Amino acid sequence: MFDDTDSLPPFPRRCREQAADAWAASDTHPFVQALVDGTLDPERFKFYQMQDARYLEAIADAFVLIGTRCPDPDDKLWFAQAAERALQTERSLHLHYGDQLGYGPEDLRELTLTPNNRAYQNHMLERAERGTRLAALAAVAPCPWLYRTLGHRIWDELGESVDDDHPYADWIRRYADPDLEERMDIGALVARLDRWAQEVGEDARDRAAEAFVTSTRYEWMFWEQAWTGQDWAV
Image (tube, rainbow, N blue to C red; front, side, top):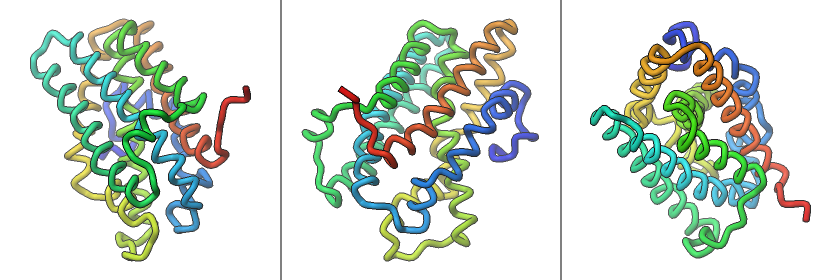
């Protein structure tokens, strides 16, 4: 149901509708298309994977920060588990690909973040620390939610199968896995967006929707930075 905007509760639907153009642009980005058809340059994939590993550490920090601001123990537990899921993804996916692509934990520690990655992390963490709880959640929501819908789309495009000799079969299977939605707990994320939106005024909802749109744009830029090899100009 989370791929169908019309079936969403009011505030999550508003977020998705306002971010619709940026959300759709991720689906059609050349990096994603090359990944799906297996023609993606391994060096571009390595660039993406290494930057993503550092991003996942930051979103885990953001989840923890949001959890500390929650008075409800159930919410605290959910955000702690979300942080754990992000770090488990980093370890299982990125260490696996590190062996294949030739990088290790020390390389990740010494990695210079791209301008986009740095800005995206700052955007999330600033809202996790100083924004409303709703804006903080809206800022972290696009990452897991977009990857889940993208996984659905890719799986459908490939006819619900991928050959073992596809160079990115492991990545595709991970994000296309039907059980991923439950493991990532997208339903609970969407429910919290809806519930917390009902607890604040329209100005706070406006700021939260803007944070959601901004993060969705940064998600598109994450593909773009890997496709172009983004670096600091000086």
